Amino acid sequence: MAAEKVNDQERDNPEMVALREEALAALSKAASLAELEEARVAFLGRKGKLTSLLQGIKDLPPQDRRRAGMMANRLKGWLEQAIDEREKELRRMELEAGLRGERLDVTLPGRHVTYGSRHLISSIIEEIEDIFIAMGYRVAEGPEVELDYYNFEALNTPEWHPSKSLQDTFYVDASAVGREDVLLRTHTSPVQIRVMESTSPPLYVIAPGKAYRHDVPDATHSPMFHQVEGLAVDERISLADLKGTLEFFAKRMFGEDRAVRFRPHFFPFTEPSAEVDVSCIICGGKGCRVCKGTGWLEILGAGMVDPNVFGYVGYDAERYSGFAFGMGVDRIAMLKYGVPDIRYLFDNDLRLLAQF
Image (cartoon, rainbow, N blue to C red):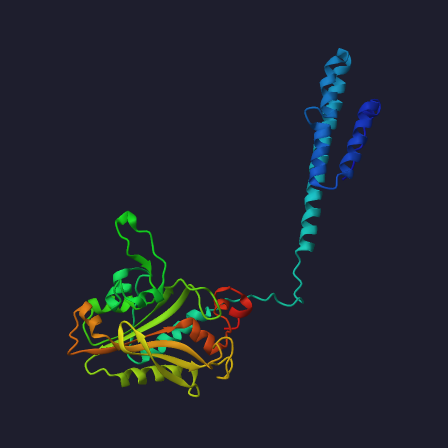
């Protein structure tokens, strides 16, 4: 910032010379725009030093006012120009400093971009769907908030049936609409009833989705879990068809070397019924905490559709027969990928989820 030459008139006025030198020193010292603004206010503000000098001219003798006014205005013009030049210089310095700080070093390694992936449960559901779609099944969906009729009664489980207590669930307060039979479904089997109400045989359908039961969380149980229910209704459907279908599924899902077993069981909406187990992948069938020492993990419940169920949907039980099954998606994920605790699937821990 160049200093303007002091003329003879200003040299005869020590106050003007001192003010010019003080202003020059203040502008040179200002190292930022904020400090420059402080200097501007100190000299040109409403209460600034040059402003006070200009206001005092009126108190001078008349013969001195003109010359003093000219010198003060000349000093004001110089000061405004000096401030403007210093502001441009500071802005240029700040821009250069910013460019140096933001300079891209092309020799640095690239930043890793983390990509998301499908959740293990979603992948398993899609794999199950692919297997059954290849066998001619179609996918159906239904509401998670269900009526007692579809969740229990139409599945041959009346109010008084003792098996209903085994599926303790969460009920929804629907008193505002005058209902007391609204609940979170305990399985996806209600979808089968809804599909049969609107579809005539032959029928081959699977129903994936969430289900809810009042279970205490442990290594193999969760209050919210995922199921895929299946239903086949046609003429001359037999237990052999059920067994062949589920063995084919188990081999496709877990590999040809996995052992499968069928155990007699009871379900209110199928007769006869069976539970289907697959050998434990965690311990290789030797027994562990996950399989509770048995070497097996249950993945399926299945059976031939009880004729009473056909009565609820208007199917001719003398002409048609069928089988139904329901599998736990979460347990299948544990078996297939060696996850030791079902709770890991819902903890959102990327150390687990990023593996799949």
